[in-house]
Image (cartoon, rainbow, N blue to C red; front, side):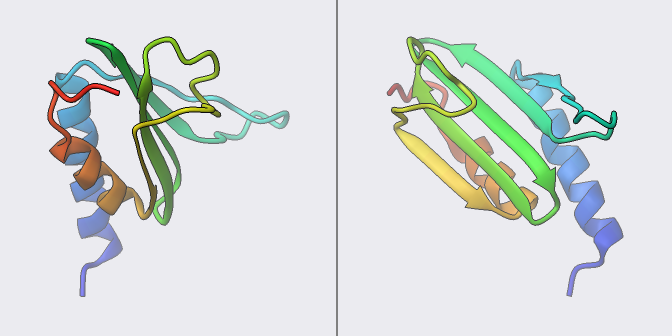
Length: 101
């Protein structure tokens, strides 16, 4: 069994790996000023990769064409995962950089 501390360390390491790959992160807030999510975006080649972390157990990541109009709710994507932050980040990190939409 993995402790929540171990999980947090793993997620932190994964986020650092994404930053090294060029992801830029935003921290949108709700009307009360509370953190709503952590959102990472990276545009490369002909695609955009987006990851949204809501909680440790609720994350979503997508790869979409670079011409997608709404990157937070795309109408088209070539890859999408939803699940725990650790699992989604693992799968996002496994995507090859040369893969296009």
